[in-house]
Length: 445
Image (tube, rainbow, N blue to C red; front, side):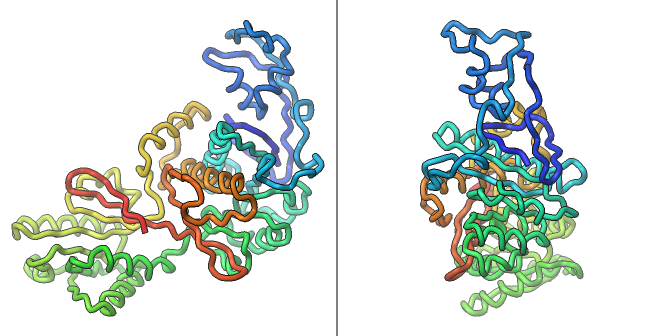
């Protein structure tokens, strides 16, 4: 467990569950371009704490020179852990927010490496919020797949958290849910989509939902948005596809609204394939598979169709999985007017995303990994949203839309409570539209 204030971790963290990591560095050799502020935050200190340990820095004419050595005070010398401090003011709006992180934070496997990157995004948000006057104390615990989370929950620091991000593994949910319910701690589930505990814990905020739970709302939104289109549902002969449940829900929604649609197959000859399309209205094509190979065959079929039928209008409705192919398939996405339903889009705020990527490289001496969605950006959005909410509303923050000005880098968040005494689910969702003119729009719902 590590307790830090105003900090960024500059090296890959390899944490062991429940082990305190104390500051051991006593001096620092200044490198070219470093600043007092940057050095302080790299060691988990405030600038005032670093200056206090180096009296010369208090002079107005002090200059930080390359090669000089400065004293780095230990954590015990510079601050009192909020876990030991008397809790005179328990209003989170009037003090530092105590943020817990219970995720696999290690370099053993992909889970750990991914969550370290997500954790770095959380830290970058804490650093950003400092400039808004929001201070955060961070308690980070490594909770691997094989670890016993109850050992961590027994530690006194855990019970003093205002908010906890975790867990990654569903099997740890029961213990963590019961713990947060007992202590009134906000629990943000950043990735797991299997959390039935939401139904009985009003402190839980689940960010991502199962694809099956999104079939009906996506079908309704599809029918609203494409009300003037002719839907064409294409069978891809994919025996392992999980998308048949979506096309079944979509067909039911269209039939309930008395909207006509056509059925065809990727294996149909071109003439039979073309007969499924309307020449009077624009068409929207839906595959019953998310396989990239089927998507590529669909592009070929659509190319032949449009070449043989001048004036025919066609759009293609895809799946969130296609977001991982967006860069490689950008030309086809724009050519075939692709819409992708997704809970994220890395291009929502291009300038913010670019700045964050540069800052990440500066802080951690490496680029973000090529995950989709980028995990550090996800962590940044999550922390910014919830920590701002706690600072403004305290423990009454409900994550609803419009509570404050929130511009996500890639992850829109809009939570709805699932009933009296229940937790909250993120209902922010959008269609990412790759327009033929090369532009990309996001249509929120």
